Amino acid sequence: MKLLVAFALACLTCAVILGWYVYRAMSAEQPSLPVAVRASAVPQAAQVPDAQAPPSLPSRKVADLPTTRAVTAPEPPLEEQNASTPVKWADNVRTRDAARRLAAARETLDREPYHETALRDAIDAAGELQDWDAVDEFLMRLIELYPGDAALHAQQGIVRLRLRRFTAAVRTLERAVQIDETRAEAWFNLAVAHQSLGHLADARRCWDRTIELAPSTVAHAQRGTILLDLKLWHEAAADFEAVLREEPDAADAVLNLALALENSGREDSARSRLMSFVQRRPRAVAVLNRLAELDWDACEQRADEQACARVIVWCKRSLVVDADQPGVQALLELAETVDEQ
Image (cartoon, rainbow, N blue to C red; front, side, top):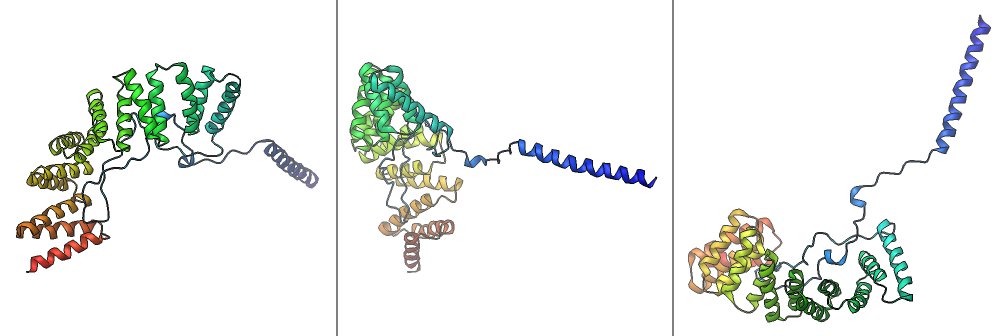
């Protein structure tokens, strides 16, 4: 009996050892699973040129507020902007694929410089790689093949905006709208190009046409800033009113509206619109500061005691939200001194 038990234990031990070695062998043949990648670490896909925003434009300051912060009108995106600037990673599969496609297209173009399919492939691949100089070069060749294609001229205008070649962008976009007067995105980008060059009358003309074809809050806001520079206060106010009907919480629009109203002699209306805004958005620092500035003007010019008292209220409310505003702090101290007299 003892021999039988000992034999059974020996067999069990051998089975355990054999199972361990089989498991190790199977594990060695099985590839390890990849480590999960965080969604935030996945690079975004590159976008083709017409889905990108234009370069930053010199925006007009709304007013010399008593603060270090300058409030500006929004920078206009190109039509159909819906993506942020992509992050390019060395191991991005799409980036590698785009580089491969661009190299293949270049080989063909070295033999046949005007091979249409290769040109279109090169434009698409270079766009994904954000090589805008290359895109511009290939578009120029394609436009030589199809000089009457408004879409190609419009696309080249976008590329030249990205390259900050505003004068060149004006030329090609003017050609696009000459070929097709109803192409709204070309008028939009032409307005951006003229505005970047400081061509106020031309920019206004292009924003007018853009709004006729495809009205938007961005177009109204940008035309409004042009009209402010042209000192067309009533027309500017109408544009900012249009923005606020669609986006009632647009702080830059209400600030520009107040500026237009004040300059057209409607100071009470300007104050009323600003006060209505801060009732909904009590932490809007720039609007609180603008109210303080308006009331300080009334306090100084007309010795309006109520206006002097309101300056203190607006400054304190602003400093509660953002204490690091030396200009607002200085205005508060000055208003308190006047109030004590």
